[in-house]
Image 1 (tube, rainbow, N blue to C red):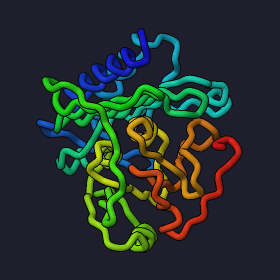
Image 2 (cartoon, rainbow, N blue to C red; image 1 turned 180 degrees about the vertical axis):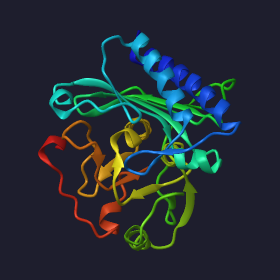
Image 3 (spheres, helix red, strand yellow; image 1 turned 90 degrees about the vertical axis):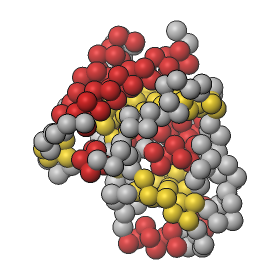
Image 4 (tube, one colour; image 1 turned 90 degrees about the horizontal axis):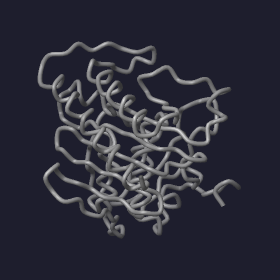
Amino acid sequence: MTDLDLARAVGACARDAGKAILEIYAGSFSVQHKADTSPLTAADLAAQRILLHGLARLAPGVPVLSEEAAAAPWSQRQAWSRYWLVDPLDGTREFVKRNGEFTVNVALIEDHRSVLGVVHAPVSGELAWAVAGEGAWLQDTPTQMPRPLRVRTAPVRPLLACSRSHGSAEEQQMLARLGPHQRLELGSSLKFLRLADGSADVYLRIGPTSEWDTAAAQCILEQAGGAVLDLRGNALGYNRKDSLLNPSFIAVADPARDWLGQLGLTPERTDHDR
């Protein structure tokens, strides 16, 4: 099986997880809260079971790190050179609000990089996938042919993809430095997809996210020509430390534009990204 075949097979698993999510979404459901106060529903757990079963079948022996499963300790994870990083339902807050803006995220991590990414939006039917060095594609609905994804050159007045459920005063102050712009509020990994398909230009996130929130979409955006960088200009990496939290970051469609400079930040790339 080629890497592209694997990505398409993972996409089929993501669609199966999406169907299970929609069955619960269509009815009534209860909401629990985890230790960090983030919400948890039966849909998260149903999608988790389907994805774990599917990934074990497709890649036996490759470990899985998922939001809804007990995280392996750092003493074990630091020996992993290849593993799956999964968010069975990215945007549970949006699921609870019933606004449709949630996704299923699956990434394959090799040597700290996201080399295969799949993002599925159950409500719209969108399925995006990418493989490092091979490109990125989007299938708008299950019956349509996939189309290649490509970012756009940043316009004078950029369109900012912004979180619908998160944000801070600091973030708004920084974005104001970009000058005149338009805004698009979206939940989950849909913000990354809009950058990758040429609909939006930049997504700034000040504050913590988890590694499973970004890995799949980062691969898709990178293979479409964009980038996901910390605020020193380094590409986000994975499984480099005990904590599974990302630093603040900026996702951009057009890396040629000096976004960090416009935000008043000075890039300071580290050795492992040179």
